[in-house]
Amino acid sequence: MLVSRADQWAPGNMLHLVVALLLVPALPGAARVSYEPTWESLDSRPIPDWFDEVKFGIFIHWGVFSVPSFGSEWFWWYWQGCKSDPYINFMSKNYPPDFRYEDFGPLFTAEFYNPQQWASILKESGAKYVVLTSKHHEGFTLWGSKFSWNWNSLDVGSKRDLVGELANAIRENTDLHFGLYHSLFEWFNPLFLTDKNNDFQTSYFPNSKSMPELYEIVMKYRPEILWSDGDGDAPCTYWNTTGFLAWLYNESPVKDFVVTNDRWGSGCICKHGGYYTCSDRYNPGHLLPHKWENCMTIDKRSWGYRRNALISELLTIEELIQELVETVSCGGNLLMNIGPTHDGRIPVVFEERLKQMGTWLQVNGEAIYSTKPWRAQNDSVTPGVWYTCRPQERSLYALFLNWPTNWKITLGEPRSWRGMTEVQLVGCQEKLKWLPIGEKGMIVSLPRLSPAQMAVRWGWALKITHLKEVVQAAGHQTKFDFL
Image (cartoon, rainbow, N blue to C red):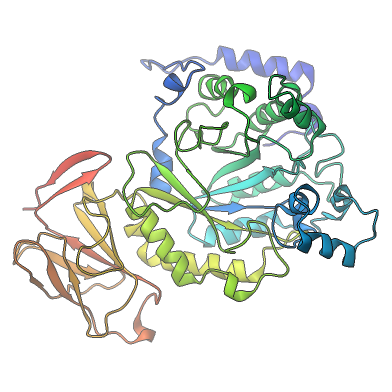
C-alpha cells in the first residue's frame, strides 16, 4: 500500500525505514554480492531472470506536453529551445502572446484518468510490464515530488498522484511488472543550465533535484524497472549514477529484482548499466551478446499524443507484430509506446492496437514468452520467417508473417528426422505434413483454412519438435536429444 507523501517523507518515518532496511536479515545460506560504485562492478550484476522471460512491455509517455499535443513530446524544446517555425506558428495562432509553457500545467487535468481501466487495457494487450514517464525533460513530475515544488501533478492540474494511482491499479488487478521512466536532465531548469555553463564542474542540479527524485520514486513506488533517460550530454560522474546504482543494487527495497537500462550519462548507452537500449527504435536484426530492448512507438513521429497525427503515420498491427517477432528472435524485449491525452484517455486507435496484440499473443504467446534465441534468427531461404525456441521443452518455433498462396512454406534451417519430426500450426491441433530438403530444410504443407477459420490473421507460428539440433540459448551450445 502506498502511503501519503507527507507520511512517507516524515523524518521519523525515514529514520525507521533506513534502520529497518539495515536490519533485514540475510537469507540463510545466501552469500549476497556487494556492488561497488564502479562500472566494472555494476556491470557484473546479472539482469534478473524475469526480464528476459516477459519479452513485451508497454511504454507510456504522458506529461504536460500532452496538453498542446502537437508535433512531439519535445514541444517545449522545439518551441522555445530551437524555435522551430511550425511550433512558433502553432502558438501564435492558438494562444495569447504572453502564454508560457508553464501555463499548460494547470490544463493537464486528467479528469478522465481511470487507472483501473488503464490496467485492464494493458492486461488485455498481452504485455507483461509497463513503464510510465514519471518525469520527462520538461521537469514536471507525475507525483507530488518534494523536489519539484509547484511543478508536479499533486500541486498543479489534476491534483492527483498519477504515478501512485497507476502503480496501485497495476499491482491490484494485473500481474504486470511496474516500471518508471525518469529523465536525468531538464531542458530549462536554471540549476542544470548553470552546471552546463560551468562545463559540469558544478553539481547543483543533480544534488538538489534529479538524483533526490530518483531516490524518492524508488522508496515511494518500488519500481521493478528503472528506465533512465536524458543525460543532457553530461557524464555519469556529474550525475553520480554509479553511486546511485550501487545503492539501488545493494540497499534499496528493490535491490533483488529491479532492472535498469543503459542511459546513465554521456557515453554509457549501449555500454554500461543493465540491459541495452542503444538508441530509440533500436532493432539490429541480429543476435546481440547482451540483453537489449527495442523501445519504439505506434506513432512513427512522436512518443507523446499528437492531435495532428494521421492514420498513415501510425504502425499497423501487422507492422507491430513483425517488430515483436524480429525483436524477440534476436534476444530483445519490445517496449511499445502509447501516448495518452491530457485528460487521461488512451486514444481508441492505441487501445485497438493493444487489444490486437493481446489477441495475437493469446494464440502465439508460447512462441514469444520465455523463449530463447535459436542458432538462426531468421530463415536462410524464405524471407520473413523468424525463429525462437524453448530448449527445455525441445521446441522450435518458426514465425512467419505472410501466408503462402500455395499453402506450402519452405524452411531452410531446421534439421529434421523423417518419421520423427512433428510440425503443427500454433492454435491448431492437427499435425502437418512435411518433406525434408536434403540435410537441412523442410517444406511444410499448411492447413487449408479460410480467413474465418484462422485463430489470428496477422502472423503465424509453426511449432516443430523432434529435431536433431544444436541450438544457441543464452550464449551456450545445447544439444537437443529428441529421441
